[in-house]
Length: 422
Image (cartoon, rainbow, N blue to C red):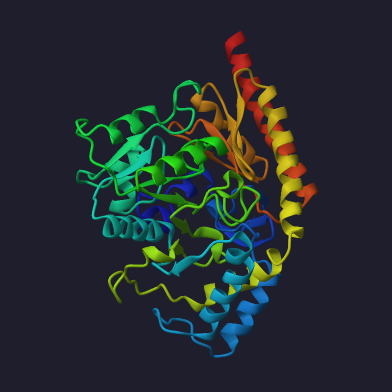
């Protein structure tokens, strides 16, 4: 027994699947203290889109820290915050014709979701929020209320109210009119269903099984919300910052959400940072009405600015990511084809393979770890092998990781076939 076992809470999870002591990392490689090297197809659950200890971000960070500049500033003005806001405006918002105000709600994904829900209720004067089957939006009470996972919801200890779940894209048969029920009850004054303040959606459900909404479905949702004056919130915490191939995951659908939640890789370096973006006319906050001690984390502003300038100043990086996306999906299709009933899910570099036997994905992830690959599972029954490499991964590294995943899949499938034959 060691200190992790004797002192740390039972709530710990990732270390149970990966029982190594990780000591150092660079790019897409992570090394444990016993010298074992692992290829990282996890990327800090999406917080390390540009890899570990990226020198383009590390050097500006070290220079800033050595300079004696402000580290903690609440919401006060600093040169680091100014440069981030200017860079974000010039490289991200303006090229996409987005005129969002930027709020720093606190440093994590659940903080930005909580701020979005609170703002939607404040603006509309309505309490109810609609979210989707298999959604995941965070672990604090407001975020949990719009999350679908029953195990995580039980941890709240109290009823999670003022929200309802509606079917995500292809929840039924892919043919049912997706918004037929919602349209009907919103138009029927006798339905007994109150008009919601907002609908919150992930374009790809990272924790919920890598379900990816069609662009047409997202456009239909956006149009429905506009028609009924319901605010549309896109939770881009995991799918954003380039993971689906464009900076925001909703760009492909051609929609403009009213509110956007961003976190994880916005700092670029794995430092805590989150943004809540919203239409200029929705900025109804009074000073201090929503705040937080760590919303002015200047080292994160520095690395976020460096990430935007290094990777998003032109279209070259997006083209490079596009090539890795094609490579990944071709590899996943080969893996899915090797197991009867398996199929590929997800979009961009947030993708994976779902297996008909829910136990298969976990066994494959464990076999991959034994072979030097970090890959997790997703879905309500952990039935999906979830692949989330760094956007900066090389073609060779991606091929090597896919080869390991093939070996792990064959090992698990082979074992199951042998057991069946016996």
